[in-house]
Every structure is written in C-alpha cells, then in structure tokens.
Image (cartoon, rainbow, N blue to C red):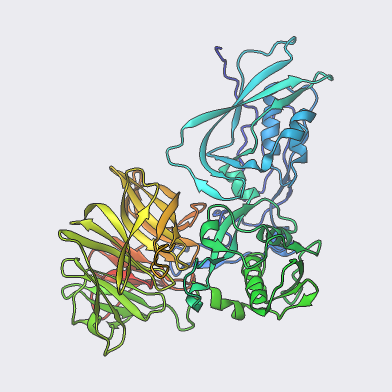
Length: 627
C-alpha cells in the first residue's frame, strides 16, 4: 500500500533533567511534570553520577535516593494523560507512547489506550526497546469515516535494549531505522483504541535515563568445586534497571530474593535460599542507617550463611542509602548484625587505606617502577632491574608480578620482595609471543598468545605448573587483541577486531573442572555481550572496581579519548582533559584514587585533585594498576 507520511503531532523530546513540561500535542494533551528537577546529572544511567571536572581528580557524587529523602523529592516525576475523545489513530498512538514515559509502575494510563482485551494480554515487563529519539507514529491514507480499523507504524532507531530480567545491552552503531506495526480499532463508542501491539515498551534514550535507575544485585562467586579460600568468596555485581522510584529499597530486596539473572547465573550463586520470602511489607532504613529484615527461608541457616546473606543485602541496599548495619531475623531467629566493615572481606575491589599503587615500565632497560605519589622508585627484586620486560601485570593482592620477556616468548612471575627470584611459568609455542597478561582477584593469571603479534590469538589460563587453552565461544570470526579480567574473576573484557573495526565485549568466565581430574580447571568464556560497539582502535583498558572500565580508544568519528564504561555498556562518561599524546591509561579500584596516563614522550602522569601531574624520578611507559 502506498503510504502518505503523517508526522507525529508530539514533536516531544524531554532530555533527562529538564524541568519544564513537554510541548503541547494536538488535542491539548500535556505530560505533566509534577516535581521540578534540581540540576540533574546528564549522565543519568550512573548509579552514582560521575562528576568529570575540567581539572583535578575524578570524584563520584553519591545520590541518596531512599524514599522520602531530599534527593528523592528532587526527582522529575512525569505522569501521562488518558486518551481524549475524538482522537485519530496517530494521535492515539502518540498518546500511548507518551504514557509509556510516565513514572507509573503499573502503566495504568498507558493501558487506557488499549482495548480491554489488549490491555489484559499486553506484557510491558517483557522488555524495553531503547531508541535514539522519541519514537514517531505514521499512517498511510485515511482512515475514512467508515473505517473501523487501521495500521499505525512506529518508526525509530534502536540503540539498546533491556530484557525481561532487567539487564541492559547496547546495539551496534549506526542504528538502522525500523518500524513496529500497531493495529487500532474503533470501539462501540466510536473511539480509536489499540487492539494489537507487541509486548514490551519503547522509550527514547532520554526517557529511559529519566524513568529507570541502574542498580547492582550482588551474588557470590560460584567456586564449582574450587578452593574455599577467602579470596574465592567474593561478591559479584550484576547490573539491572528498575523503574520504580517509590519503595526502591523494598524493590531491591524482592529482586535479590528472586536469585541471579540468567546471564550471570552459571558463574555465581546466592547464599539466600531459594523461595525465601520477605515477611515485611516494606524495607525501612532508619535514621541510624540500620536495616532490620525478617525473612522466611524454610531451610536451616547458620551464622556463616547469615553473614553472607546480610552482606549481599548490605551491598545491594547500599546503592539506595549509606547502610551502616543489616540485621536479619530468619524464621524467627535473630542473626548478628553485619556492618560494612564485616562485609568488606567479600569485596573484590576493596581498596587499602594507604591509597593505590601504580606501576610502569622504565624505557631503555624495561624494568618496573612503582608510583604511590608524584615520585617513582624501582620495585624490589629482579623485576626492578635484573630482568627486562615488555608488558607487566601485578596481582590484586600486590604480592606477585608477571611479565613478558625475551621478545615476549617467556612469561615470568615473581614475588615483590628483595630476595625473591622470578620463576618461568610459561613459554610460548615456536614463532608465537605472549601479550596482555592480566590477573583476576582470585590469583588466576590469563594471557593471550599470538603469531608474532598478529592474529589469531589464543587465550590461556596460566599457573605455575599448567598452561591451559581457554575456549572462547561466540567470536564469529573475530580476533581478540586485548583482555582484562574482572576483580571477581567471573567476567573478562575483550577487544575483538573484525576487519578494520572492533568492539569491546564482556565474556562470562566459567572456570569448570576436568571431569577426569577435578584439580585441574577447564575454563570456558561464553555469553559474549556488547559493551562498546563502535571502536576502531583500542589503546588500553582497565577495570575500575568491579562494575566499570576505563577505556582509551578511538571511534570512526573522533580522535583517541578516554571514557568510563559500565560493564553492561549502559553508561559512557568521557574523562575530560587527558594529557596530550596519551597512549595508555590505568584506573585503580577506588573511584577517589588517581588515574595514571602514559604519553608518547615517555612520561607518566598522575591525576591529582588539582590536575594531571608528571611523575618524577624517571621516564615511563605502559602504566598499570593491580589487575
């Protein structure tokens, strides 16, 4: 059918944080802003908005958004208006799309645009299609006064999605335009209503950032038969997006009780027993920042399990407010309160009170120096000058250092003490070289091996007595050129090249075991998810804590620049005023600790509160933090 394009009447675009109402639409429908925003963070997808000053350090500004707090009162609240009499099909669909942007958790206004049967059948919780701009409705010629049904197209360019388990994933750029067809019919009162529509909702990027809040659920590493050592008992963040602003603490607890999402589930576990119920109607955080929760598990829970359950809850609720204590009552029996200090033992990204220590290579002799301030000094032992290295990685306990040496064909590991000797852990195959060594937070060392710095690369899991190839599923012909392991060891960030373009992806790390020899791991990386879709070049990447990356790369439209990227790609925040000629960067665990940058004149810079400062003592390249 030859369609004549009728432009949507809305013309609406309400950026996150806008305090004024949206433009009026034909039919005088107005989406009402009931609370004016304070100065809203333009990086709306961060759980804590990141402030990127033009000079000085990077500082996170935490928003305490517990119900009833000042921050909660300052949130923009938007409510849709029901359909108006006499609306044509395009107006009706536009009104429905606007109602989807409402802060109502149950979509009651949006459902008024549907027939009763469609309202009962429609499942908005099935997922979110996130589009570049406000979606627009179009229709062909008509309908005539005699018509009782019509098809309305909704056209948009998708940039991301949220699945039915509230997990986000970006879409490759550039976004192609696509359309969704909605069937509208006249009811017995002569009013148009939507009769047929796909499950889920459509939101512009700006509306998604305003309506949804990202939070992490916290689970424990699933050791799958591995050691029960303390470094294997780590909490793992899993980002999800929640619509409700009311009773957010209660929503978080109920979501946690449901267990891990399907993507992360194979490598984590919850210490909260299945089918555990929250006995309280709401979760309250009192004036002392204490949380008391009554749970029913139907299973025996001892003191150790109580502590681990409370730690999961403390880290999860800590995104709503600063929680000082969580005390559980499980099936009528009170557990000991758990404080942030008690739970810190499970944090893979815990930072030392003395601050972060960075490391870099000294050009010429390629020895290793460390930096804790604006001064540098050699590391103790053979890595400080007796051996030469091309790439290094320091374990997260800062007890061991790994380095590639002798034209990258040897992988040496040694303790960082004056009398320690470097040990040869692995030798590359003939004609091959090692690249990009990286440690997880559980003592595991990972490295790429390639043919003369060219593809294809093989990922290896390295120990003192083993060198195990790691299967990576879902590469689709791509070549891995850079890797970084997460602090908890459940994720690996990989840059995968496809011809002249690349993409930063996150893989799930399932260590597994050899059925014939349960002492030997058989790791597999699978479930690849897109994080940054449009890089043409990657200079460096590093983890900052357990839930975001510092990425130095280049897109086809821009020069090389650094950016923070959430582990699901849900938020990207550029780091302003990086040193000129930056070649590599490194991030520490703590967000209040300084970044390091290596520039093309072989100098190392450290981001101090008053700006970037050159590290004195010696020139350097390839700065790294533990990891």
